[in-house]
Image (tube, rainbow, N blue to C red):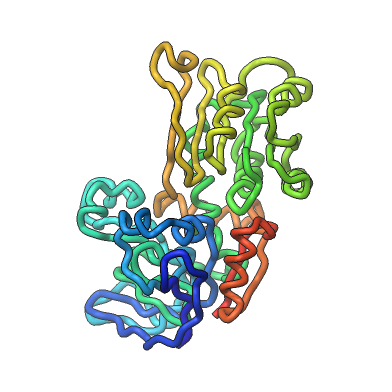
Length: 347
């Protein structure tokens, strides 16, 4: 079968011929119908040799942690699912036995790292292939009649902002203001989710005028350039005072400076992007009652909830489709910021 693999550190991914994997005991072989490309993949492929060695991901590695497909074969002992079922793969997998995993919150499993349990495409072979292995049927969510290509990005680009926003629903009351920084694959979903789940005024910030137009298209009340005048523009649009929540889908020092300038008592600063920043926290280091959060992906129950929003036409992913042979180009466009929404690879 064909697979899009990261072969050498610092080099573009390659389409290669590899054997079709066989499911072991308890495993499921999935025939992939769509796989999503994500900035997390681009981030990993942008690491230096020294940085990459800290992850310990073996190469070559088939990319793709957003996955939907059809059950092709069951390993011995695998149950609760049938050959031919259309399913989506829950990516942030845990040990399956601890308190967090028992609640479906495998994204916060405290044992996954020690047990070397990795998401597909981020430590083990993923979905950018004609077939993939899923270790346990519990990690498969029924897809029903949802379109695979339109749905696959919901497994991360929908789930991650949904989980981030749910953690701030207590401050996103009617009359509040929410700011989304970065209107890319996740940010354009966050705008829609804020409009659906809250009564907040939604403001989008980005460095691209095209992305700002996109933000208005998907529901932002206001959209402004992300620069040192962003705060003044927001004040002019909605009045003075701190915003209720800032959802940062970029996470670098200049963006954090903007986010902090918008914050006040009880503001949530939610850092979703894969970057790393330094800031002062504590009673005298931040506005009283404000919160910093760094949410990671989302839970299995939340993914089911995201699918329900899609089924009722309350959430839609903007996608651009590529064949498996075009996979390297999909990642190039992702890296260069040329995508509107998400890239979807169709094996």
